[in-house]
Length: 385
Ligand SMILES: Cc1ncc(COP(=O)(O)O)c(C=O)c1O
Image: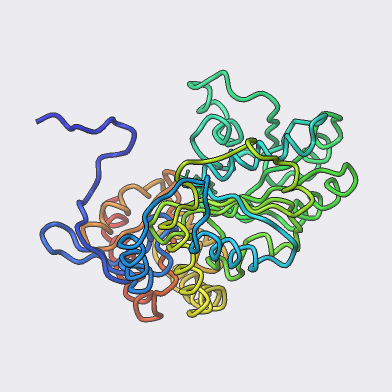
């Protein structure tokens, strides 16, 4: 029988039917330890009781009304989320990371009408809709979808000189960046680049938007990845962990910038509906309850130390529970498949790089168990080389 799916993803190695905490169960009932968390989404673990119960109750009460109206969960989610930032800000709710970034691109352009060009970085990933894709630093890979959005300039990552040169152009009004590049295999920005971002933003009055879709909400050991660098962004985008699996996105903007949007400038049918608001509230409560940043920091140190002892490992990079593992050989795909065979879910971002993004509720012993299995997978792959 022909596969009914359009072929944009690799063939899946498993069909998962059920999840609980850090475990997934396939259709035959087999258990897998999940060190990917649905790509940094399920930070509170699968089927988290708080999120599940809140969503069930809200669905029975009110599911959707459109953004012509407000609902209590939406209002409360907006208050609670903006309250997480140490600056005066407002929020726009979307359904995904790419939509949050589309909103950010539009807002920067509206707020800097005579300087609409935005600087982005090679290796940065911001989504797959045309605006966010144009801002995604994948070079030639994007050309299949040309013409891309004009007014985006992509400079090499961690090259402060290139940023400085690009920022001098009079048409530049903003910068969009990931403090820790996720899809590139977990690559933190260099301190020097962060300092240059601060400098050029101050010098040329550029708006700084930080994409925290993957790194945000505690994963890196701080609530937001940019806090590791003392950046003071004007715009922050979020998605993934904000819904723990319920599709949500958010763009948070500093008050002075947020006010550039007027009624009708942007919108969404579903964004921030009562279900999304409920999910966001339950997630923020859950993350606060486990003190997510501290937990990720502590467990991240243990995870990275253990990974360094494994065969085939050349370098371990990352922050908190956002970890990239550079291998000595281009066997990441083989290690991934072998790990899956052994009941472990991980991810690879290039032929020689693995990525681990475990749920933040994982325990030290579960991390130990995961590293054991990964080691076994690496020994099996390494032995066959
Ligand atoms: C940093 C970053 N930005 C944006 C996106 C796009 O998010 P979504 O897939 O929800 O559109 C992703 C997804 O991986 C991401 O990692």
